[in-house]
Amino acid sequence: MNHRKSARVNDAERDMARMEKDACGRFEGLSVGSRDSASRDVIRLLAPHLSDERRQRIRDAVRERTYHVVPVVEGLANTGNVSAVMRTAEGLGLQEFHVIRGSVPPKKSTRTTQGAHKWLDVHYHDTPADCIGPLRARGYRIVVTHLDATAVPISAVDFSEPVAIVFGNELSGVSENMLSEADATVLLPITGFVQSYNISVAAAMALYHADAARRAAGVGELSESERERLEADFSMRAVRHAEQLLARSEKT
Image 1 (cartoon, rainbow, N blue to C red):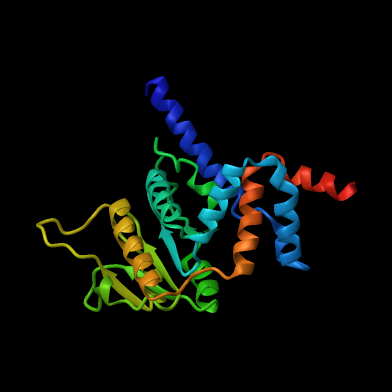
Image 2 (image 1 turned 60 degrees about the vertical axis):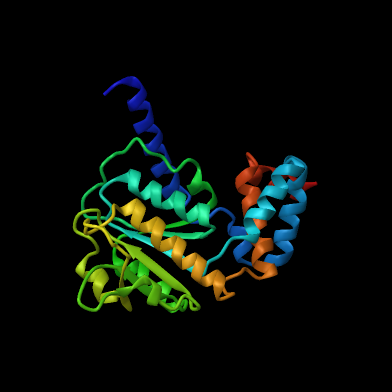
């Protein structure tokens, strides 16, 4: 492996390590007490450390965010594919992302998330039940991309209700355990001779359709309170040493 490729692999490994480290969330202070008040304080205190352009970019991104469509990847064998799906999710404004680890360590890849993981709420799980149980308890319908006798076109799915879309391993697809958790299985449109798409293409098609459908239904927009909390969270992610700056401000 040449030095340039080795450096790209190291970048990808650092991305994955960073994502797992951040999986518990960035701003625990927003989860207790007066969250709205805390959010406004964070935005106000960090504003001097951000340019006007950066603050506006954060607001614009927050305005387009949603928790209505949630991508889930299960047992992907290549870290580059996890990164690719993550980049698609972030680009579409899908804020929450779940990764179910496989039984075999994923193959290293030179592809990175290009910073997408920094702006997503990424959650890691060891089993499908660990992931799906809490999602279903929050009201999500579990839709799995899988070709079987009961699979319906993704265009037939009702995206007016919250949906988690599951994508499986590049070769073997989703596990039997995941299929047992599914509320529905869906297939993507294919009119050519190929029988399937690669994972990054399949995810891009499915997530774009889901987000477009929920927008058309007029659902999934964040409340003003949710936007404020997310703007505070993004401000913390954008400012270096934000926690130290906030802690220092509390002492003055």
